[in-house]
Image (cartoon, rainbow, N blue to C red; front, side, top):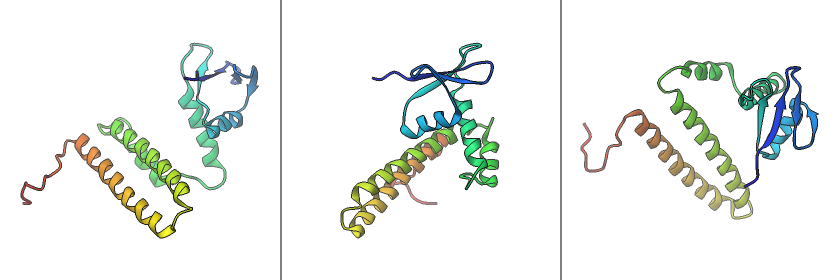
Length: 154
């Protein structure tokens, strides 16, 4: 298993990539993300892992220029979950949703050479099945029990 790349953040706010032995910018770190390179950013003052903070900085820069990914109402909804009882569940739900979206993109690229109608039908059915499973997991984690076929509807 390859080790994670270590990037150190110094008090002067500069980032140092230990693998290539040079200072890097946020744009360089963004390039690592885009290439799928695993890394951690450590604060040299106390060895705290500040990877999330650096990634959020990159996201802020991306959101500031061009077409934003998040709308203001969407960000407000996310902020409302902080500190709530469902914060962890939302985090897992969003992560699984993004993983699912990436898998769908990959599957679409793989099947594009086939008959487009057959490929889209299979993709739609997989999409429905995966979202149904994700919804059931979300409801189960919320404390709701899935009704079985033998139970009567009220």
